[in-house]
Image 1 (cartoon, rainbow, N blue to C red):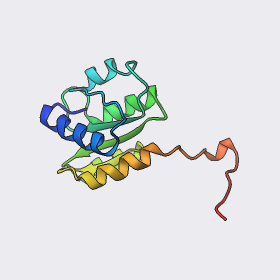
Image 2: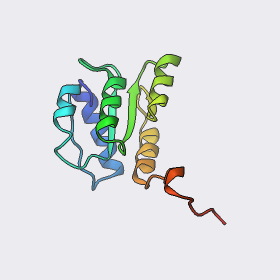
Image 3: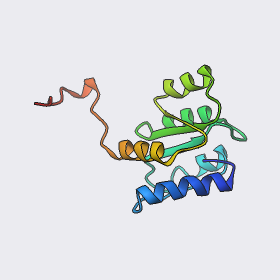
Image 4: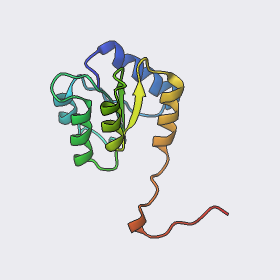
Length: 128
């Protein structure tokens, strides 16, 4: 989600170069994002911090309430401690602008992996 068409095209290109079989759904603002939540089985969200309407943190929080298993990255040039800590408090990935393809590729690879079961779901096997 980004209000800049050029930025959305850049992110789309990175995603499809790294995950060519994925479907990308774009939204120009938070209202459009919320309207598209039921369009498909959304697994990740890459959200710009500075948006009209809800900012990236507000949109991510609302998105995670609706779809708790989604993996979220927030892109921003604002690296103030309060912004970065807010992003991390949501469990989202912080991606500084200008966006680097290698960093996005690592996020996409991690987002593709199954989530680890929480401690309440029982003990997992250890590496041996």
